[in-house]
Amino acid sequence: MPEARDIRDYYDAVATDYDVKHGVSLAGQAYNFATYYVPFLDAAVPRQGRILEIGCGTGVYTEWLSRRGLDVVAMDLSPPMIDEARRRCAEARYLDGDCEDPGPVLAAAGVGGEFDAIVGVNTFSYYPDKAKALANYHRLLAPGGRLVVVDMNGLSPYYALMAMTGFNELGEWMAPLKESNPPALTRLLGDAGFRVETMIRFAFIPNGLGAGAVSLLKPFDG
Image 1 (tube, rainbow, N blue to C red):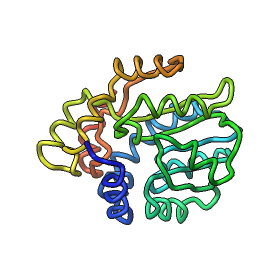
Image 2 (cartoon, rainbow, N blue to C red):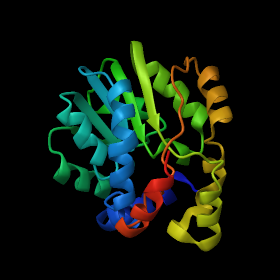
Image 3 (cartoon, rainbow, N blue to C red):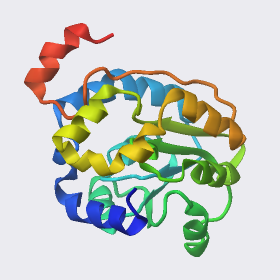
Image 4 (spheres, helix red, strand yellow):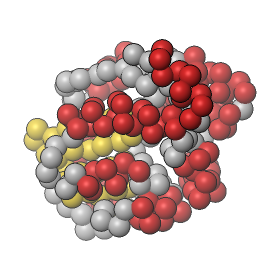
């Protein structure tokens, strides 16, 4: 299982081409974002208040949260990824540090108080210690605050195929990714003190596909 330093080194190295390498700027992600992510986030994320975004990456979802009018603190382990995010969305406040344990980083930066929501998109499944992360998030949320996670389902055969083919170096991430599945997440969330309001499955079309492949698969979606 990758160590935190190895994870940071990897994202530092791929920051400038991350959006293409991991499909964030490709047609599959654009389709899923418009069709599934936005309706889910629109229903789940508050319309006002303070938001902590965990694993902000290159700022694609930071930008959406900021345009919603929220006060966004965005955190990522990789400073070069934060540089990319800041170029995309200057309105958020950015901090680099351990997204599994944001408390010390927030305290050191003078960011006190509680958050109305903690939001993570396509990051949580990679965390080696999900139970620790959830306990830390629970402490940072205001009463009635929400944890909103959009992420990968480790039960999907797609990720095993990606690992076998060496696509996006996924093999080294398979152990934590397999922990990210509906039954395991339900148990982890309950153990951390969360009550699951909504858990849905979507995104039949892989994010990393180009326009032609998306056009072929769209009739089979849903």
